[in-house]
Length: 64
Image (cartoon, rainbow, N blue to C red):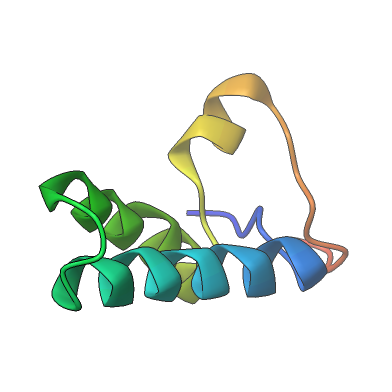
């Protein structure tokens, strides 16, 4: 698995994921807010399957 999420992209994914999950737990939005788990995990693991599918990469590090 090559890293393909980096920098600001990673930070935004984690923040958005936590915000959606937090809003769901607080009852501000419905159950669909659990979709925040997806950006949270892609930000934590620095890998996005959709980026891999489309050949995108925002990680500045050289993959070995």
